[in-house]
Image 1 (cartoon, helix red, strand yellow):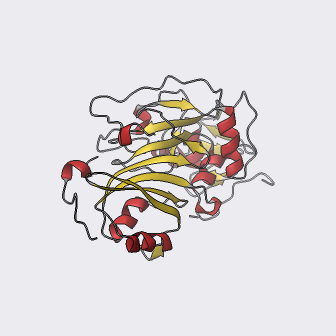
Image 2 (tube, rainbow, N blue to C red; image 1 turned 90 degrees about the horizontal axis):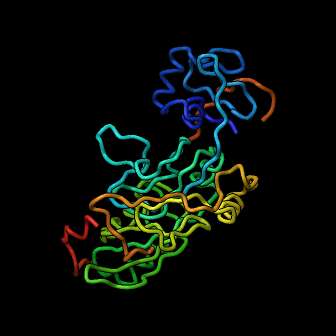
Image 3 (cartoon, rainbow, N blue to C red; image 1 turned 135 degrees about the vertical axis):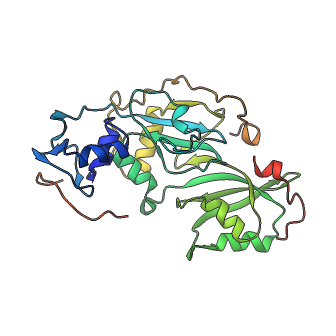
Length: 298
């Protein structure tokens, strides 16, 4: 599968994507013997000879990791503002990246991998991979508001495609919902509840496709088991990798707990001929619990 050259370099552990762009601009990267300086170049690392300073890219062992992301970490590989990133919790020699988003104030299931094809299919809306959340909102929405959410509220001019939404219990601060969606717009669950007047106080992602959080404590991580990996690949229409070369050995992988301040949310719930192609990039009634800042920070 073709991807941008700088992304391929990052996936192979050469450098961060930004540093990879600097290498390309400096003329240190070649594809099939031709020096490339264009940021828009797309390549297929399985079919093409890609070299940095004359040395071919090293093959990387594929890793497929599930992490219980705690509150307070961001889902990027680095941050100029010095905020903690999820990569501080996962210590592996391969260069893995977070698959999709989970904002700083949210917690729950997060995948990390260096398999570009799988990352693309999990994050692209056309494959409609379900994500399930448990969401505490500020207040007690009436049935009419819940029905409005089921029909799909509009955010940024587009309706949110909700597969299912059900209230499952109440707490002192408000109502806990189970929400299933398949799109991945930034903070979309929070924004859809804000749209109907009930801000989110706490959000935990408990499922991605066939994968469930199931009792992993915040900050813990492990490789996917062969069975989980097979189910995930089939869910997005890919052939599962051969066991033994995927990194999905099924062993617990030394998960670590975060430092001070980490909390257990919801009580611990949880291609053809060679050549460089240059295609364009595709791209409330709020009566109870309102105004409780300590909950908002949960």
